Amino acid sequence: MNTETATFGGGCFWCTEVIFQQLKGVISIKPGYMGGQREHPTYEQVCTGATGHAEVSQIIYDPEQLEYRELLSVFFKTHDPTTLNRQGNDVGTQYRSVIFYHNEKQRLEAWDFVRVLSDEEIFDNPIVTEIVPASTFYEAEDYHHNYYNKNPNQGYCVAVIQPKLQKFLKNLH
Image 1: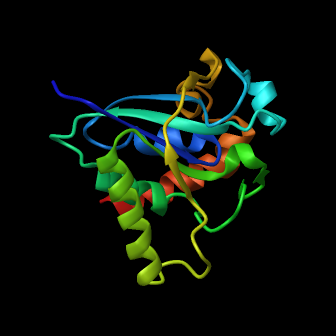
Image 2: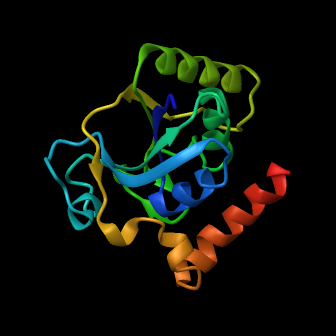
């Protein structure tokens, strides 16, 4: 099977992971860190904002079943791309809106997608999403993997992730 990789930062990776898990054609998702200066950062280090990394979800998908453009659509529908370095109560550069492209085709599609959203004034404020080349991906610690599904009753999951997931699922069908 031919696979491709997409990497997005749209706030807390617990939120983005569970959203992308819902899509047919997604083979695997790993939470992690990208875009910073420190090698092998820990969650605690990234949370300080000092490493420069964003929390990301790295998605391996089957392009025969799922197009990159569809991933972009989900990405932009499930976070606020107009707030600089924040998503809701999560504040800091680690929560920035960012697309890490893995090839020229992804770069062009991402820029085109943002241009269309901007031209159509989909959002009330300008899109601040960074579109930058993928760099070294550092996989997050094991306890972050599949976090929502393992901890659905945890406070953050109930208050933040559940409503976001329910809204997404309602609009998916």
